[in-house]
Image (cartoon, rainbow, N blue to C red):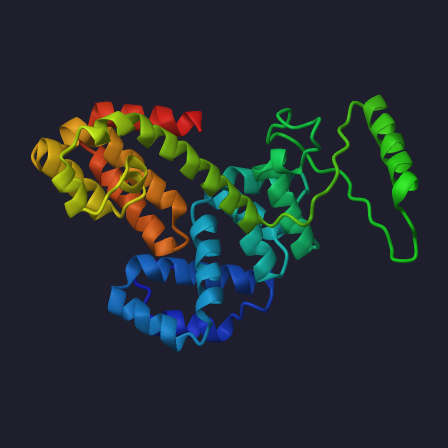
Length: 314
């Protein structure tokens, strides 16, 4: 697939390769969608999207698969594709892993052609969010460099509850300990979506605390009452939680003006953008905030260093 890919070529591929077909069908279709997004004009890509007869959600999922697979070196790409299942839902879930994690998981047989969607989902959570699956006494000990060896299943006709369940867990922990392995209780009720939402809430709380250090209650009290009334702000919390236009507008009017805003309040502005990015539930808005942060930091080295240190500490 080269830069000569045309709209007709892309549409022909969608007819010949169905996302409910083989692994090769899914991979070919996903790469076509991903590369079409990069090669076509927006208007042409929109036509492709509409004429592909693929629902928007599935189309987006396939694009994500193509985006991830297209970053793999050719040798790794072939190895990974040979190990992927013939299920676009499972492949999409597995593509939540980083390319290097995906390659390693296929190589050590954690990912096989027989892996189910549920197993794929759990494997991703094990690798990306190991601490979310740890028991209370185990939290903080896990790294991502672990291999999922076995799963244990119970049929409906086998009772395992109460004291019997506790006894089973004790026996399993003792057995694993003798082999220097780790016994971890599964938590299938936690979805990747809920984990990401929880992490965004935690990051939002952290960025709000950063913002509170930059825009303090004492600073707010010193500002003119007529400006507070003009912007309908009664306290510093309302300023911190206000839309970005009110936030920046108030600070510019009461203190530094537009010309000195980024010099004097750059940290507060970046913290505010990060807070809004983590709070929004709209992906398009999230990407927009991320892009604004990137642009603001592109020519401000000190602010970039500060931002990166904050991100690493979260």
